[in-house]
Length: 185
Image (tube, rainbow, N blue to C red; front, side, top):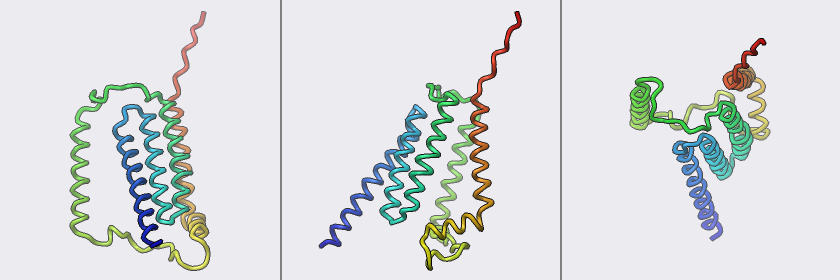
């Protein structure tokens, strides 16, 4: 009896989180205001964090909230506000001729690739076995993850952080308005 009630609670939590994720995803795509899109992205990321908690992946849920919903979306909002792209723009005006047909063609190719992957099912859906070792054994998952990130993958981790800093500096440089030329009297 208790097991059946737990099953219904899990199902209800999944359904509510799925509705939150889908609503946020549609909000990201359909919002005309970029700030509203970023806030819809936060809603989507929180819904995904709930799904991680339901799967007992607590570390991933915490990372989802702290890193993605906390840091990355704040960076997005910072860039949106800095560049001033929160103003209304005509989305039907095409600054680059032919970009829409190219985008539609690339989307079609991606859809064909996905259909081919589904048709010829292989190990793509489950992924490959871990090259960093099994997750079982002594220690917690967080300890194992930290050990792998800060030993074997330290260079990739540091390069990623440098790229994020470069992106922020680039956004600031692009958003900076040129100084007014001082007129000599």
